[in-house]
Length: 484
Image (cartoon, rainbow, N blue to C red; front, top):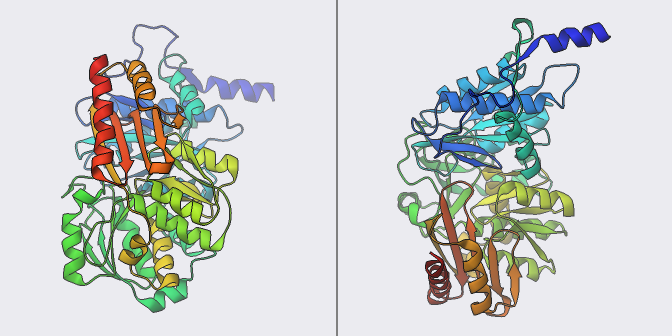
């Protein structure tokens, strides 16, 4: 046994000693966050960077696996750099002794769902999600089917420079196994949600206008909608990776889908971002209702069937809080970021949750934002209530969200936070992620935080009127200017 262990250890060689002058240098403009790393292709992000991060990730995973090679699921969105970066990431994983389960072009939720089905030890998704077309990224997940949390990410990053990467010898290199049924398995899991009446939805024959922005959603959304008996009228359904609108599926970016809904007389319009973990909706009149309503309506459906905690982030609209109050449920708020919401959901046993950017997380399927889950839940709600999307939206009190952003160095944050907290005198103060001030009786709140995906400071406010929300944003800008 000792001889076998010694032989196995000898099959790996460290790439360099600690402190060597040849240590990998992270490019200045590269965005390194909890979920992974992202940058502009050909500038801060290239195959060398991708390979180094993938090898570091594979080395981190390998320390938890004994007696076999680790298995890592690899998926990508449709960006033009995706195939190149996927090959680089896959080769790097092989080089540190990890087997690669390559599912090819696939949405992020499909890739993370495959972890469980493949009994894998983690996953890498090559996607920059909502970032502009010139960006790409690696998003890193653990064996539990969720993105790395803060502690896991910190441990993994040690392998970038502080801990040597052990490369595998010729006879223990990882292998690549293509998989072609990942999307099929994902769809089957969504259709198996206990309170989704597949046959009744099929009988309703919903007419759906769909915009997948030529992203990874083209391999998922049309298929699940057709499996639910929908008549699908699609735009941007070729996975070219060349986006015909800004990638975020926010209301102001959906003019083409709004027109398509009216042209096809659709019951509903649905739009995804490039990696299809977020879903935004357009009502039957051709009006984009705002991405916050996706989670709100999905939650409304789940609460018709189950009782339990609901979790969202600090920047999600009060409309979700109103729906929870209607059902006697206290809404829990976590820091912004999918993993923060997912971990809180796991801790409290939430029945549904997500983020107000159109990201719905349903533990019945997995603890990951999932556009296919969101689509099924919203259709089920329309079926059960017999109401059009505009009617469901009209039942809720309306709020106006105003979003702004400034360069990360726009002002000293701690001082600005203290000024705002003192001057605005909010009854509710939350400091777990930047600063969130709330006035529940007035239906308004303000949230400031540094973005984890872009070099900016986000300022978000919500109130019953645009003037009220804009006033809060202006107060935040003035506080920052005073600290500059």
